[in-house]
Image (cartoon, rainbow over all chains, first blue to last red; front, side, top):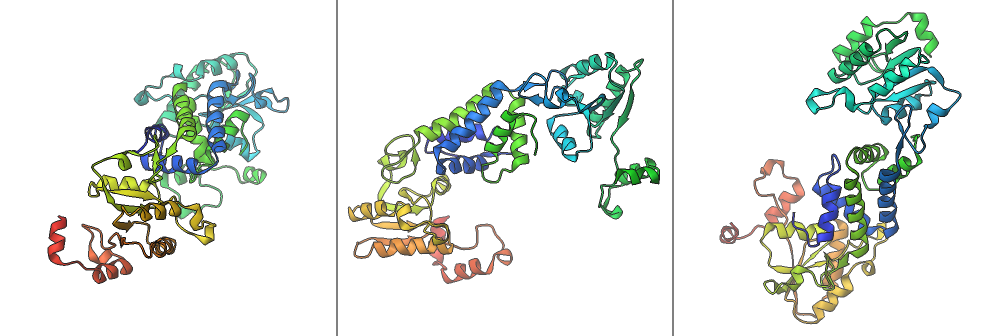
Length: 206
Length: 206
């Protein structure tokens, strides 16, 4: 791509560094900004700079937060004996949206993945084990994605918890509510059957 | 979407103002920036700010440029008697990429579109007619998209040129090189046949 302007070229280049945004899309976005009042560009770039410069991570659960201890960890209404282990903030947001969970979270920041060079020490596992050893946590819910990396991470944490009086669980996998059985993939449907729950239990959930 | 951080929420909100980027995508992009070195965010926001603040439009063709007169208009190698009328900079880049065009451009900045409230005076038509009246231009090539708005704009300019000794043409529409006839749409194929060119002429183009 040949640009008539170095400024434009730079902006398009930087924009196309974002994941899933190619040169053409970047050009479209940048030209859009040029057509808008300049305040919009200022607001965008300032909000990004401010976020990158001032963002904090909660000391306890490592979720993104504006303060040292995030709202969820600081809330007296949450059950401190229950901790849900998730990969990143998007999982926290998804679970919070359900309104079904009253425990705390622990954000790992990723999964153990030797292929991508992510080891246990790149994640916040040590901090989690440290919290577990304080004795306040009664149950740990693993809510990582069910990939090989997710399973490995779950198992690594599980082994580290040996000797501590903490029960562990994973979120239920199964056919989504409202889905037709015939369209569910085999692995999911298989797990749904193996991990079937007592009918009385399913009534309570509704 | 409930965010645990006001900074994050702001950044996601501003990012999702870009066309085709929803809240979820915006969150993904912003979280990506957070995982990268902070220099990347700085580079992105500075390049956008700099572009928005310092960008110039060529005095003659109204293309985006770093200087008062863009490279193409300033080049002594270009044929000043030939002007191609396009909608925006992306069209200039597309035509320049072909390496087949040695004339100048005129960037309108849009098309006349009563539906979107764009009238002739929102575009750079007056400047184009002004240039035409100087007598240097011999041919005007209309290269707007072949929509109703494009046709309207072409016709509006054409009427304004009455009395001036300037020939006008539009770029050829037809079946794309390498395309199979059976998959071409009817309008395009129809135009291809109506606007057929002498066989000797087609040999020259190759």
